[in-house]
Each structure stands twice: as structure tokens, then as C-alpha cells.
Picture 1 (cartoon, protein in one colour):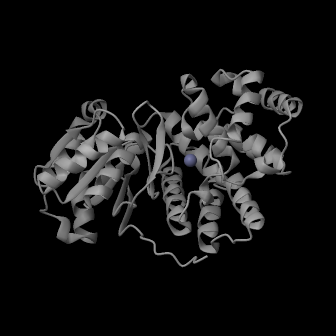
Picture 2 (cartoon, rainbow, N blue to C red):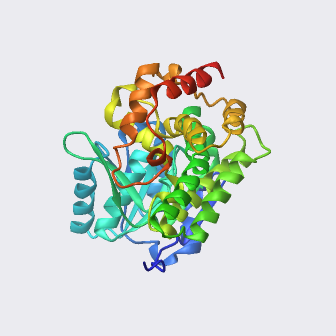
Amino acid sequence: MNQHTRFNLPICLAVEEDAFFHSDEIIGRYIPEMIGQKTLIVSEPFLIGLYREKIEDISHDFGGAEIYPMENASYEQAVAIAKKVSMEEVKVIIGIGGGRVLDTAKYAAHISKTVYICMPTSLSNDSLASPFSVLEMEGKTRRTLSCKIPTAIIVDTNMITTAPIGQTLSGIGDTIAKHTALYDWKLSAQKTNSRVEDFAYALARMSYDSVYHCDEKDMNSRVFIRILSRALVMGGLAMEIAGSSRPCSGSEHLFAHAIEEYYPELKISHGMAVAMGSIPACIFQGQSPDGLMQFFRTYGLQVDPRSYGITEEMFADIWEKARTVRPGRITILSETPHDPARLREIYQRMVEA
Ligand SMILES: [Zn+2]
């Protein structure tokens, strides 16, 4: 198999205090040819209301860019934006928002071949710089589609500190999930007689290490926000280099996908679900989950399934369904027989912790 696939890296990764107030200067420094080009800002109505001043300021800095309020995070919405952009000869799309906005804007930029500038208002998962967009399809199911990574990523650390704490916790969960994801990636490589992409592996490992071993325990501090932003971006780049989501997504993600597909009414954020999944995944892998549990406690990230409305029966059912949500993906689940009694024990252990 040819491992020397081509990959892209963003030209600009700026993680600065008040970066949104001088985003035009930042872009001017990195990609001056984009200044003065017709630009479209994509966001969500409630965010446009919440951050009106900042978004209007950015619009002004980018030549009076139109502010487009997207209706949903669907494939159709991304196509509609791409169509508008092509018809109106827009050259740059700026996405301002959380994962929904960023995934939709990223995909719209990908299919319309425009420059994409990613400006997150929260750090809820590692799709910031990943080569994938998760979009709603007709019938409400969600699909993960390949796309080009952003040309520029601008993180305003002040902005992130004002985001709801649950979003940052979700970003922490998605980063810590790399621990079990990387184990599963190695296992899969062994079973299929292929190999992991060393550089992608190292990047994802460093992403995890930088947050897991971080001395700063105040997750609203600028230091922590900077570390988490870079960790999430490095996770995205690891996926770009690997050409797959494997460095960041293993059995703990299968657990999260099973919740999303079979128990959507639970409405657990992606990062929280994978954090919860990482504890049993660790145990299946023969690793001690104590370190992760201690880490989650330190930051106040809840992994007690009860607190999300997951009963013992549902917990066992979700793990059973996790085996089938991504056919062909080899993880520790492929090696672990479904054992409801053992799952009950793990559930109790998570409740008691
Ligand atoms: Zn994830």
C-alpha cells in the first residue's frame, strides 16, 4: 500500500488573545493575496446575535463581507452555500462558530474550491483542522465526509474563555480519547499487516500528552486554552497525514457513534461521549483506566453514565451496537466478546467513581 499520500497543512495557525479583532492583519501577514477578495462569513443566527459586534467588525475588516446565517448543518446547506459562493464569485469563506458551523463552512469551501478561514467560538472537538465534515443528511442521519482542511485557523483565546464550559470539556474529552484510539490503530495495523503512519501517530500522541500532562488545571486560563487549541489542531493534522480518522478515533468513538445513532434523544456532546467511552475501552485494552478517571475528575468532566441518563441496560446495549456502527473498522471490540456481566461491572465502577 502506498503510504506516501499527499497532504495539506494550513498556512496559518494563529492562537492569540483578541485575535478576532485583528483577523484581517493576521490573514494579511500569511496570505496577503486574500485581502480585498470577495468574502462570505458563515455563522448561525444565535451566534450572530450573541457576537454581533465582533462579527460585524470582522465583516468590516474583510471589505464589508456578507454575513450568512445558516439554517442547519446539513449537506444541502453546505451545497447551497457553495452554490451561492460560485454564483457570486466569492473567493474566501470565513466560518465563525462551533463544530456545526465549522463543518458546514468547511465542506462548502471544499466543494466550491474557495479559501476557508476557520474561526472557532468554542473548542468542542477536533474537527477544527480535520479533513472531515460531519453533516446531516436527509432523514436526520449524520455522515462523515472527506474534505480539504482549512487554509487558516484563527483562535481568539478571549472568545473561547467566554464559551460555555461544557464545550471546552467536550474538546478535552475528544483530545483524551486519542489514548485509546491510538491503541486501536496499532492493533488494527497488526491485524491487517499494515503499519501506522509514524508521524501522524506522534502528532496525535503529542496532542494527547500536552493536555493530559498539562500543569495548568484552570481550563479557562489562556495557557490552557492555547494548549487545548493546538492539541485539537494537531489531532486534525494527524488525521490529514494518516489519510483517515484512525489516529483520533477508536472503540471509544464507536461507543459515541452508537449513542448518536441509537439514542439521539440523550443529546450527549461528542467529546463527553468519547470521554465516557474511553474508560471501558481502556479496560478492554487491558490498560488501567485510573489515570484517565483521575484526569477527568480534576477537570470536572463527568463520566458517570447515570448523569447522562444511561442505565445499565442501555450501557450494555450501546456497547453491543458499537460493534456494528462502522463495519470493517478493527478495534479492541473485534477482540472482545460481548459480555453483559462484565459491562455491568464496568458500569458500576464508573458510577462509583
Ligand atoms: Zn472525535
